[in-house]
Image 1 (tube, one colour):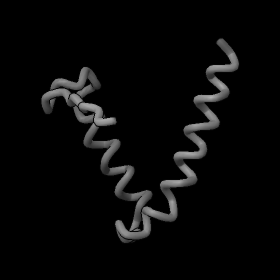
Image 2: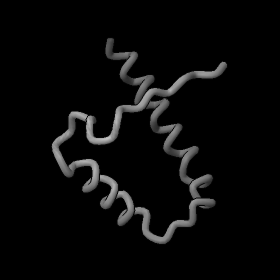
Image 3: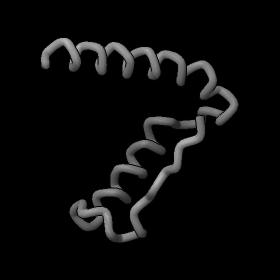
Length: 61
């Protein structure tokens, strides 16, 4: 099933000015010299944590 993704226009995020640039710079620092091909080792764990978080949120409702 295909889903469409909508994005906001640049500069129209509603965030404080400079916040997104600071966030990206911080993410780049944390990433360090990780080759993009190595993401395949990180992403499954993040997906699992997201699944557990979502399941916990549903239990609280």
